[in-house]
Amino acid sequence: MVLVKDRKKLLRQILRQAREDAKLRQIDVAALLDVPQSYVAKVESGERKISFIEVLDFCSAIELDPQILIDRLSL
Image (cartoon, rainbow, N blue to C red):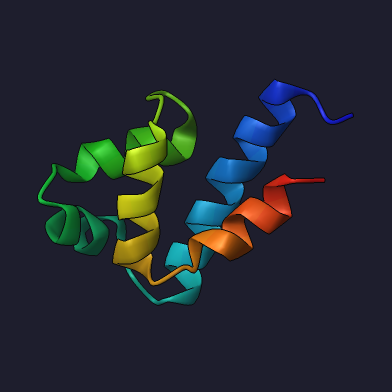
């Protein structure tokens, strides 16, 4: 079984990679979420925890299907 800390790290990596694949900067995602750019940076670095609802909002902003995210985290 994969450790929780490893899955949290994987979550951050997937979100960041999906943002980059969508050719969005942190500031772009922040604008879509109506939050400061530092929020996105802290989420991606692990400095800030993110709730499930916030994950869904983040996925929407970067156009990542949440089911794909869930599948990748359900190792």
